[in-house]
Length: 279
Image (cartoon, rainbow, N blue to C red; front, side):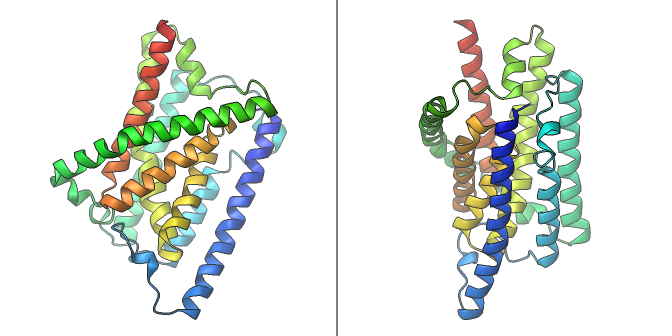
């Protein structure tokens, strides 16, 4: 687990993000009262019109639940929990899938929305367009995030030398058997892109865009996405990565594009770790 100092920083950032959400909703509400004909939140290809105040409440509650592990008392959050084993990773994957399923059930059964249409999955039939978008974003994504990660690493070394790597990275690097590594690959390349993209780009970004605008929604949803990973060293790179996912989603209107980019990024990171371990 992160140490007390890092947990404290993450908690401060969570409070700042929560305050930004509150002030942003008020500010954009005022702008719409002043300019009732403005509809900049409907620009782009991501559908946001169907969302209502109920979805805003559900989104806020979901974020509070996801961030609850960050907002524990510092001593408890930094209590030195053991590194995750195969059972813990499997349980985490199951929880992520259940959370994702509950969100889809809520949208379809309670709200009467079609998730396939809402998230642009009906565009999958245009396979070449989706593949072309993924290939177009892949290299710039890797370059930009790598540069930001290098800058962040150098900056942190000057402030707090030797920040630990993420827990799953340590587990993957020290795993002796292939079974645990296979589970980590499955979690990183399949489960995380599916669950996190539906939650953060599909739902959180969409709802925030409905009540603010696309840039604000991308920045704030990206910050929440980075915080839940609970790792200071990768906070800014993950934030930038999340914004890139939002841009790809907004340009294409198909959530499958950031899903595939997410899977490609995590897969590339794993390959780099394997190559580094083999040297």
